[in-house]
Length: 192
Image 1 (cartoon, rainbow, N blue to C red):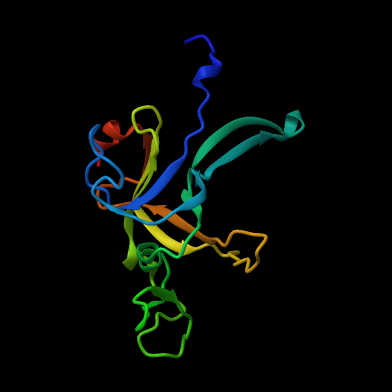
Image 2 (image 1 turned 120 degrees about the horizontal axis):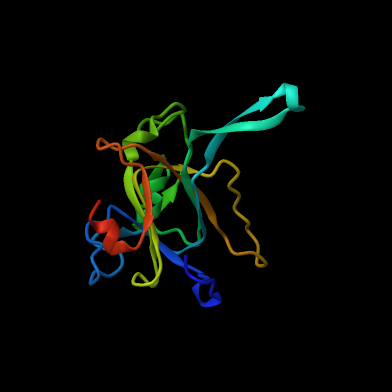
């Protein structure tokens, strides 16, 4: 094991894109995919579960721990109303007839709107949190990313706060049983 070195401590800013196709050393963002606007607070949660076994005869001390799977997801706050992001994430959007920009709408009784119970797996994308410095930092790749609004999302309509759209991508399994990976982009290319 190498000696600890504070120069190895990383801050890894990233950008989001969907359906990347080229993660080789020479590729540039969005790596053959589609950029989905500026985001802040990009956080990946492996959400690993552990079951423990205890021994009553020893006062309930832990005797074994078992890996019990994961419910991984990536969360972010979108800093802008990017047309590609809105189209790829929100279940009900429409293109404005005047501005040609997408807007989010919720009119559940209207024809053409996705109603409660709509299966979000129909909007699955391949998601990449691409590092700004791909030769030094690692990215997060989710092969089967199911987009959804963050359930406690709020829009702060104020001069004091930056607006933000809270979103999550739940990581499922693709047809090749791939879920997620963290690594340098050229290494991820070999399993893309």
